[in-house]
Length: 223
Image 1 (tube, helix red, strand yellow):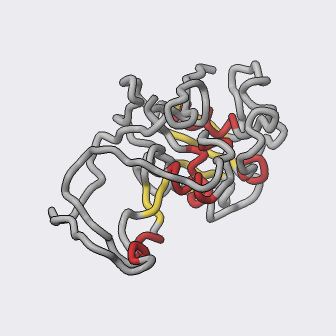
Image 2: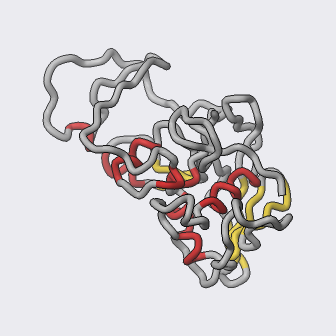
Image 3: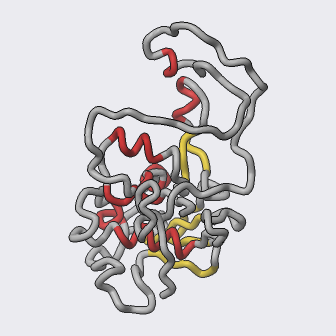
């Protein structure tokens, strides 16, 4: 099976979950241009409203954190604040709508083109991804890349910090991970019939699978 270099931490490059910050072909921004406000704002004001909005694109973000991250590889972390940080440079299948307050609790497609469909009494889940998303080097992101990101989480000797959702939910729970597996098919619980389609096979029906697929462990990046 074709293996593609996929996300590591920030600019560490190397193989990891999927390479840093994939660039979607379409703009995700909406809303009118607004002049940034100045002065003090109320504590936690950002929970229910947009604080200091700006119509300017690009720029530099500088973060000062109190703790040491377990890993900036989205497939190898389970720290809540790191998972929050990862959304700035990753692109999972699904995400949460970019808006303030309860509006931001709505799950929406990110790399995916739709919310997916179930069949086989809930044991099969199919989703398609955008065909024109590229890594930073210009390589088009494919369904095989997404599958490989999930496969990496099965090798706990390499990805010791990340969650184990897929081993518990998908068939083929004994899969050793791509670093030890030398077969041509890889993880049999996921089929990739073409470059934009993923078919997941579940051990039991699990309607909340899209929420699991929103986890940043699948964050596509462009390295």
